[in-house]
Length: 271
Ligand SMILES: [Fe+2]
Ligand SMILES: [Fe+2]
Image (tube, rainbow, N blue to C red; front, side, top):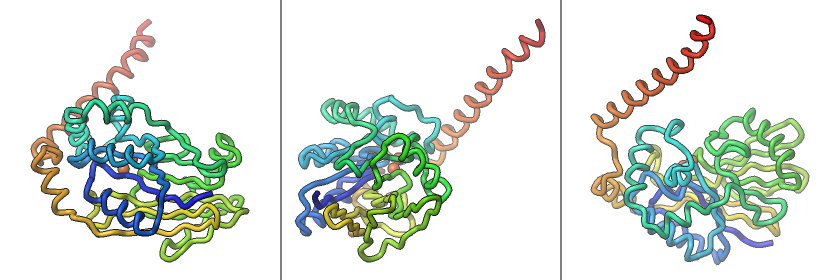
């Protein structure tokens, strides 16, 4: 039983990560969990890895971490993400790369608590509807019996979904949320990195007290202009022309795949 700072979707944003760690330090938090996507989009992947390692943050692999290590391809990420991840691959130091390569898919900080990145069985799933949460609650019961608090990331929004039998209810994230022992919860601590958000530029995280079964959400100001300037200066932002070229390349590749898939069937018919 402990008080945990829960973070995720840091995406190489050092300013935002330092801001949430400061906020959690001020509240006396000493243990940290991370639901993945340490790198991608922004210019400080090595520094973010170093900050997490320095605090022994229990971290799982997000899809951006896996792509940075060539354990996943670019087919399910945006061209903006692909461009930044190609840059990340070129700049990442060997220590940080080795650490990212060794990240597990799941972590159990306590027997009833599990971290996943997207969905329980799909690292790239956006778990954003009650129907998807209900399906993942079934996967959770099958794959990780005993786990009833599932922290997830990937969708970059602070959320609490309460599951009671087949019913899924979204719980407001303002104020302290009390987690009832009889229910299952899917909780997104929000995104440390806000560079992809237009609505606001706050670094987000959550404070989870496993002894009292409470969760509290934090939003912290950080120097978003500095992050953006660095990302642009160090080649992490795709230009409109390159974006068009990436999209054209993807369309060509997918047309070639469709054609190749049709060929064996046509050959069979010809026999
Ligand atoms: Fe992410
Ligand atoms: Fe992700």
